[in-house]
Amino acid sequence: MTDSRNPEALLVADKITRRFGGLLANQDVCLTLARGQLHALLGPNGAGKSTCINMLSGDLPPSSGRILFQGRDISGLTAAQRSLVGIGRSYQRTNIFPKFTVLENVRLAAQSRRQQPWRIFSQAMKQQWSIDKAMACIAEAGLAGNEGRLAGVMSHGAQRQLEIAMVLATDAQVLLLDEPLAGMGSEESAKMVDVLKRLRETRAILLVEHDMDAVFAVADTITVMVNGQVLESGPPAQIRASIAVQEAYLGQEDSFHV
Ligand SMILES: Nc1ncnc2c1ncn2[C@@H]1O[C@H](COP(=O)(O)OP(=O)(O)OP(=O)(O)O)[C@@H](O)[C@H]1O
Image (tube, rainbow, N blue to C red; front, side):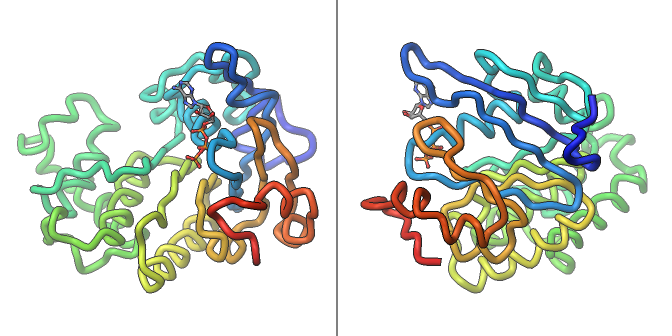
């Protein structure tokens, strides 16, 4: 199926619902992620953002609804299978090997696309392709020049960039990014925003993020969730002007003064 409203749609959530016992954590959520666009998912604490991203990545099966990738129903695929078709995810916690260098971490991610990913230090990993691929992904994530550094000693911001380089190394066409700016200072955030702007040119991005300034600086479309449902979805100007969205944030930790 192609989404007739958006011919470039890569990933479509079609009325996805997730129940936890009697709680509807997501109810009939619809989202379209298109190549060349960054789609941000906002909402107060407990709105259902993580549940949504977990369903898109395959970490959590929907109770009902469909997830389509390039028109194909992938609702039944595991996270590993979705990674193979081109859906990559970063997590709220960093997911790197601290005692490996930046290059080794990204080579390992690239190698995970092939069979026997754990033969990183074997003959297979001496192949030039994995070095070339890792170098390109490291540069795309804004970490050129850091290839030989030990991942564990880098700043928090640089580690998040490394995690993105690792997702890129899996050939992801859709990037599902869960709070990539969490815990960053303003300088690190600005760097990450630049990276996101660049990545969006050739891929589709879903960004779950509490940093409103960053979201409004980079998003093409913003979907706001409240109580498991989509409250409003549209371009940043529409969301900024929305009374319903402002009300949803009243009394919340995240300020809505953008
Ligand atoms: N595994 C689970 N079991 C039971 N309830 C859950 C589970 N995961 C999430 N929930 C509930 O589902 C609702 C949505 O949670 P979710 O984590 O998706 O919200 P969120 O928007 O990501 O919140 P935050 O911004 O605080 O991370 C919450 O009421 C939460 O308590």
